[in-house]
Image (cartoon, rainbow, N blue to C red; front, side, top):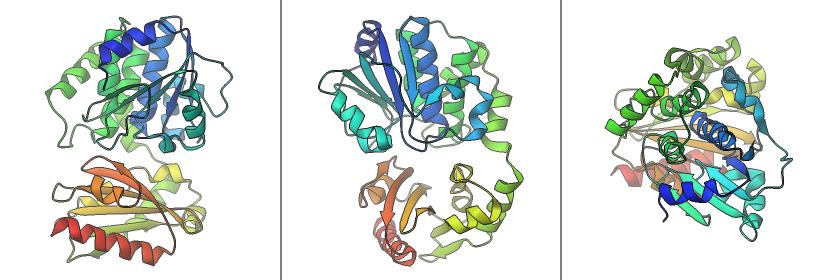
Length: 320
């Protein structure tokens, strides 16, 4: 694996780049990409942020989020993936990135324990948020911190750390957060848009979903299901379900919580969270996914009840 100092030197030598985030991006992925986008622009490096899904509307309070594109317009020197554990997480851009390995500089900066080191230059360090890694990279690039970069990085720190509540938050997380606050990051505004602001549609969907939590394995496992029909009923889209899985995990006695989101008929996105007794990265890996020990995800196909039964069994083997 390469270190950030080496990657910084590589990036200083390029003239253009595409920055890729994982499909259905969250605050940490988008914050990582946007902060790096601003930093590279300060070095006169032309760049674009690419994602195959729409940016969740709640992140539009940061003006730069409107810079994310689904169709790149630049012919570039380098492809940079941030907050993505493997190429498949890039969605429709997976093949673009793979093909780029033959003639482009490829860089992978991530914090997931399941990362496959899929680029020419890889830096993978597990920490509360990938924005921690990006913040250190920006410093090594010699770019001065400003409010735009600080707000983007603060978004990632807050969202992936659960507002600094997760067990992987350490002194370095807070030291970087302090640096961002000193540079002008508006913690109150970022926190409001990331966690508190919600539409009536989301509020209604949230209440309906949580009223039907299913408890399994003697209440040690909690499952919520969000179907396409429910989204249509409440006039919501998939992006509003971010964070839903955290509520069932907060229930006393629950060790593992799962949110099952219907993407297409017989296709479900599974989000897994753990309080620590079960390694959900290993559980997700059983079905081709991955992520972190306490927070992971995967995609599963088939009948909903059969999927729940499979997950119940797999979780049980990691709780015993």
